[in-house]
Image (cartoon, rainbow, N blue to C red; front, side):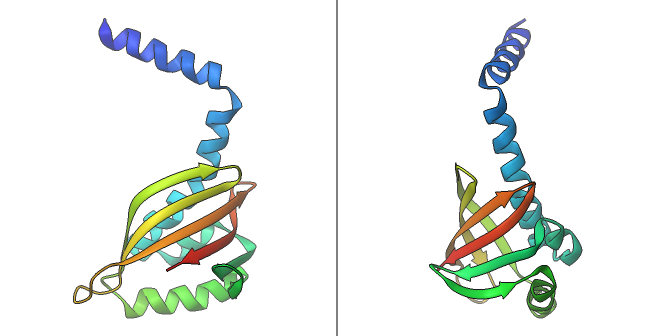
Length: 134
């Protein structure tokens, strides 16, 4: 019975929260998809989370990549060269159309992880822009 009331409460909260819950889910989905694909080295799934015209920056405004095909070259090479590559999500904040992740990246097993903050701007279910802070 306790489970029933808990489920009822959650459903009522979803109804009361309305569109906000759906928006957060839509924002997080491509970000989580690319993170999961990054950790498995699945380049096609990784790129599926990005718009064709995506822009990737070193914070605040140094453009690293523009367009999904340029990302394919850069990330494809990185996935091939770094078999130990892993990204662990430390924390996540959603603010407006942005998903802000604190990440801990392991490039190889011999070196300590690198702390990174990634700001993903999501629109129409795809990542449009990313800013990386190291």
